[in-house]
Amino acid sequence: MAITSREVVVRKIIGRKTVKDKTYTYTYYTLPLNLYIPKSVVDKYGTEFIVEKDFDRGVITIKPKTTR
Image 1: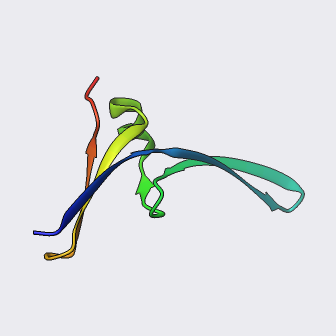
Image 2: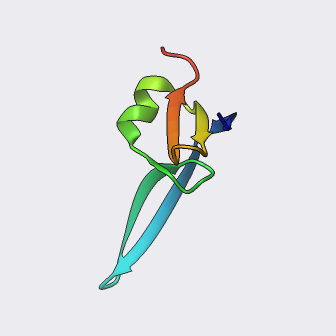
């Protein structure tokens, strides 16, 4: 089987949007493959994850590196 795994760190991205002279800010978290990670998952497991790519089945698996 052709499975590759690597350790990745979540990126915190802060966005801004202006609507009718009012500026709104929002925060979201992504992994290097532009995979969105919900804030509740980052709060529960931290910012370090393991990404496994299985090329035979075409599956990407994201696992927390450690559980708190």
